[in-house]
Image (cartoon, rainbow, N blue to C red):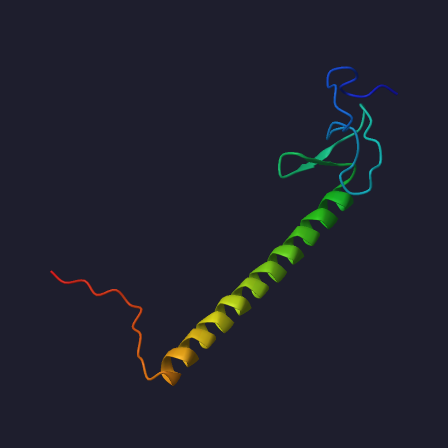
Length: 96
């Protein structure tokens, strides 16, 4: 079976509509293609859903890690300031 873009692109990398982004199954001309994030093609709703769930898990993990890092940095900064007997106020004061 011919590709969607035979001879159109001169790169070695296949076009994103040629195979499923998850399982790498070849996408045919006469079958449905399930898209995600604009440039990710999938052969089935199941493959697409698996990618969505994977991305959500990674995002939650990243936010949790990011949150715990910033929290530990704040605690570290607070303990250094209090140990040195200094008080640091981080709020903005607006005067009219």
